[in-house]
Amino acid sequence: MRPIKEQLILITGATDGIGKITAQKLASLGASVLIHGRSHEKCESTLDDIREKTGNEKLGSYVADFSSLSEVRTMAEQISTVHSKLHVLINNAGVGPPKPAGKNPLSKDGYEICFAVNYLAPFLLTHLLVPLLKRGAPSRIVNISSAAQEPIDFDMMLERSYNPWKTYGQSKLALTIFTFDLAEQLKDNGVTVNCLHPGSLLDTKMVRESFGMAQGSAESGAEVEVYVATDPALEGRTGQYFDQKQEARAHRQAYKPEVRRTLRKLSEELTGIKLRQIA
Ligand SMILES: NC(=O)c1ccc[n+]([C@@H]2O[C@H](COP(=O)([O-])OP(=O)(O)OC[C@H]3O[C@@H](n4cnc5c(N)ncnc54)[C@H](OP(=O)(O)O)[C@@H]3O)[C@@H](O)[C@H]2O)c1
Image (tube, rainbow, N blue to C red):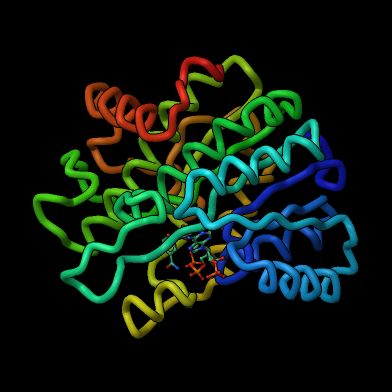
C-alpha cells in the first residue's frame, strides 16, 4: 500500500456512528477522505466536524439514498467524473432491523429495505467503482458485515414470511458472500476484498433504536474498520471475514458455491450489473 497520506478513501454511511468516527480517524492520519451520506446537511456538518477536529482539508462528500439504485448510480458517476483512482472503498452504510415488527418496509425501488440498503446498494456501487480501484491498485474494498448473519432462503423480499432480524441477518450474509465472490474475481488485479464484524451492540443510533441499549463503543468498531482498511500487515490478504481484528469463519452458507451462484444471478438481475464484466 502507498503511504496513507497519498490514499483516497471513500466511506459510505459516514454521517453517524462507526462510519463517522472511521472517517475522522482516517482524516487524522492524513488520508484524502470522501464521505457519503443520504442528507446534504448531515454531510456538510460532518465535514465541518472532521475539518475542525483533524485540520485535514482533503475532504469531500457525496449524497445518495441507498434505497434507490438510481441514486447509487448517479453517485458512482459523480465520483468517477471527478476522480480517476480510488485506493480504499469502505461499504459501511447500513440500516438495522426495521421497526415496527410485523411490517415489511420497502426501498424506493420496491425491494425489502435491508436487502436493498445493506446489500444491493454496495453491490452496485462497488461494481461501478471497480475501474477506479483497479487504477488505484494496490487497493482495498472493505465490506461492513455483522456476526448476526442469517442463512439465505432466497425469499429475499420476505414475501413468504417477515422477520426483521432475519431480514437484517440475510442482508449481512449476502454482503459476506459477495465479498468472497468479488475477492476471487479481483485476485489478479491488486484489489483486495474483505469483510468484517465491527463488534456487537456498539453504541450507535442503529443499535440504540433496535435494542434500546448498547454494550460497546462505536470507537472500537471504527478501530476495526481502520485496521482492515489500512493496516500494512494485511497487504495482499483477500477474501477474508474478520471478527473484529481476527480472521474468522463466516456463516457456513457463505462457503457454498451454489448459494454464491444463486445470489450472484439474483443480484445481477436486480442491478443490471454482470460480475464477470468487471473483472
Ligand atoms: N453498531 C453495531 O454494533 C454494529 C454491529 C455489526 C455491524 N454493524 C454495521 O456497521 C455499519 C455502521 O452502523 P452503525 O452502527 O454505525 O449505524 P448508524 O450509526 O445508524 O450509521 C449508519 C450510517 O448509514 C447511513 N444510512 C442509513 N440508511 C441509509 C440509506 N438509506 N442511504 C444512505 N445511507 C444510509 C446513515 O445515515 P444517517 O446519518 O442519515 O442516518 C449513517 O451514516 C452498518 O453496516 C451496520 O450494519 C454495526
